[in-house]
Length: 130
Image: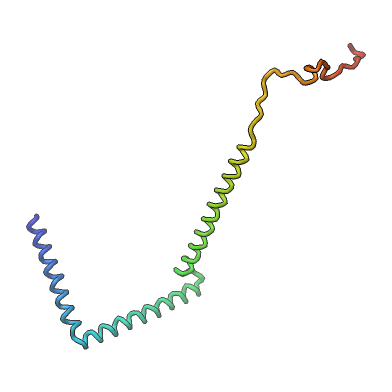
């Protein structure tokens, strides 16, 4: 298996070197280089026309383009960042509020202040029923 693997590797490397050598010789010819340059230029122009045509179709069908999607994504990320900031500030405010509000612990069985002073808390009126 290793022999087959190494044979295929050698064939691949030989073909890669052969293709590179062929392309160098081919592009060294000025005529072929000029034709290749023109073909690439035409391909980029054609791609630009196709992109504009696709954008026009998307606009006609009221579908978002890739640019629209990227703009919307940027806005959503901005809103998300703002929401995170608001959330953090709200958490800080709530934490401060909790620190300020310490519950008052009262001891059980406390007598009212009036009893401590020797007065009745609720004076009893003479009830005719009793």
